[in-house]
Length: 201
Image (cartoon, rainbow, N blue to C red; front, side):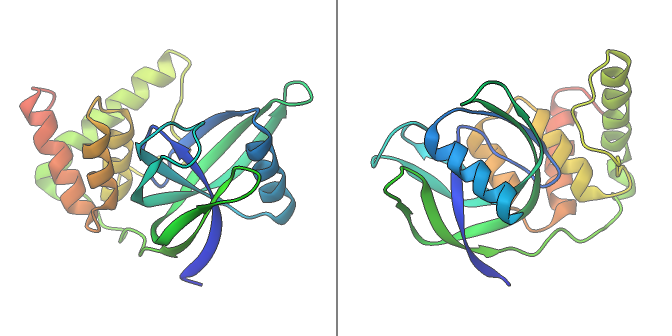
């Protein structure tokens, strides 16, 4: 179904499909969210906070697009603390205005967006692909592998998304890149940014 109602987890960050998201959950409302998602095997929606605080009530504003997240693993640290490893899956747009429930959780109807077409990076963007391959190799050598396998270096959308999650660019820029429907265009913008920084030729 393209439309569904999901619980929302607002963050001061932008989630991309394929991104590994680590969360420490201790608030009662988010413990309830995690419990429900695990019990019903359903995802929740991650949206970037455009204004307000994550812990606030009422005076918050969300970006209009977000990404569904699936809980991959759970580690309980005490009675009221869960460490969640989640994976971004599908992009969505909010339908209507999110509502805050009595327990403090936000909920909204969403409409799923089309996933990226599985297209290979254009030849002129290969430098950006090779640079990401080098970043991955360097991180693995240091014992840190932040990306979920398999590594799809032949997929323009996957390469663009991995760069977008690690580049030190403003949240507003990340949000715009995440919502771009054309993965090749997203990768091209990343390529131009890296060229401007002297990372690629």
